[in-house]
Image (cartoon, rainbow, N blue to C red):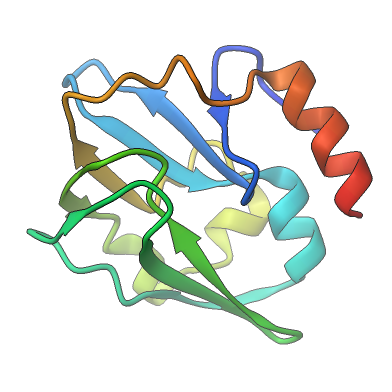
Length: 126
């Protein structure tokens, strides 16, 4: 399982990176897609919605289960990766290149987990 060091992570299995566009790019981790199995749906993300940290931003569904995706920090959802509507399996193939949504925020991501802390958390939750 991969845990790229340049990313930040949440305890609810989202990865977060600050994009070149100044926005936060959010997806689910390798551990999350592994636990869920083959994804069949990614969506319910509402562009324009303002969320508080830990509020539900969308949902991912697999053949085994459905799971909410959470906002890592306070902010506004400004984009959804439309390609995932027809090809949710992109997340299974490469969870760190298949972002799910982007947020505009003034909040810092410094308080989120680093790769080492998330790897330990993911091992505990498997």
